[in-house]
Amino acid sequence: MSIFRSDKKSPAFQKELYQLHHGRIYGICLRIIGNASDAEEAMHDTFLKLFDRIDELRSEKAFYSWSQSTAVRTAIDRVRKKRIFFEPIDNLPVANEEPADEDESMLSVEAIKEELNHLPDGYRIVVSMRLFEECEYDEIAEMLHVKESTVRAQYARGREKLAQRLRQRQAAESLKA
Image (tube, rainbow, N blue to C red; front, side):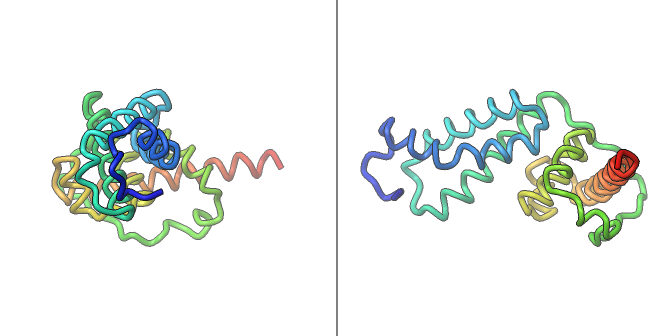
């Protein structure tokens, strides 16, 4: 499908674009929001924004990154309306980015995503944006309108909480076996 078309505003083109990218956009929104119905609404809002400015698009590669950043911002806006909770970071040490333990890498992506949904909003958003959307700390800070140090602390704490949940999950599964 070529972005270089004269009928970018046509319903047929928009439908085709939606069908090609809705799963990816929905996944981004779901990881950030953590709620299927809100994620679906955010996905639809994202496409409305994309279709509104589709004439500015110059390449397929640009569409991919543009749609990703639009989805992230739209999902964050939706969560922000529900008030994101960021813990205060007064003089807290920031952990490094090395995996908490090797068992973490043994778990399925689905298990990680499932446990990620159980984290508080602030942690879930930052961890999701960093791990799955591969955003840099300064990008996340800018999108969330917080300090980069807050993002780093939230990420470190969120990863630790996620690792705890995953260890508990593994222990529970090993008891069943």
